[in-house]
Length: 399
Image (cartoon, rainbow, N blue to C red; front, side):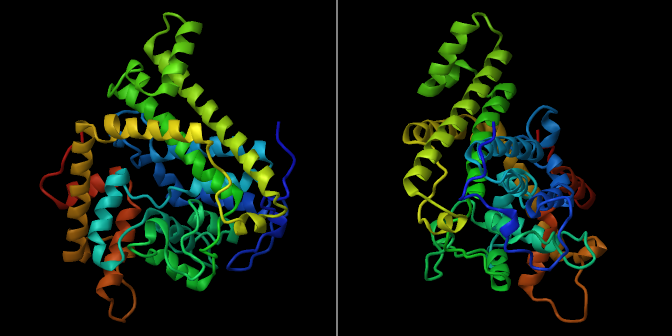
């Protein structure tokens, strides 16, 4: 059952609006409209052929970026519903959170970051902002999707503030500085980078972690990288497996693993809701502005669940992400993007006509590199492989 709308939830009736003024929809809230725009975007459709862990052609039943995204949205809405938050905004942020990812998952991000090292680097979060504010070309009056301020804020700050009160980059950006895609847009429309984002954005961030943990265990089991018994090294999983074996003696491995994944999702959702309710009760917030000014994250795992969740990630890192088979395929995938980037720099005529520079003004080296980076980031795994086959004599099979 859904909780009544909380005082600290984002209210579409009080949205700060859009960068480009538009008439309100007579049938949809501002956040529902944003959600629909994300779903109908070209970048969202491309997620179906972008790697999560396994390249798309390795099997039909492994997660892709699209199926991962849908699972994040389902979990995020379940949490938002129990907390009395705006489900449409939460869903929008969950559906949009990965549309800036390049092909081949994190391997593709590493490759593009290396290629663009002298031109500001590559950050998938900044690329998501660039997609929804500039790279989508679907509307006659503006580039991008013209999303509401609260949606853009959530896309950029779902993992917390990016700067301190003085404007200095913090956290993961403390060393390299803020990505260009974020600073350039923030100069146009202030997203208040030193404050926390809404609870809806914080929920989407935690839902991403829960979905990763659960479905990567499921995919790892399916791929034969480890067994259900192997998961007993984690105390939480061991207790759940014991309970499953007691309730369903003799259950086959496929159903045994699926039941474990369901138990993990239910446990982590319940833990997040309970801890968040505890923190909200202590904080005594009366508005979304109170959330932004609170100074601490409010949507979180309790300590015991946080430790268990970290254990899941550590297990997956060792047994899945760093598995020799996965590492080999991802290394070959990085080489494909290195090859494509170098080729387009050397022979720009190999780019599609719509990706060639327009106008008579000379283009800087950085502008050219970032234009090529935007093109490659938008590729699916399949298109990147096809382009490599077209342009080179030999292409890795990625198997």
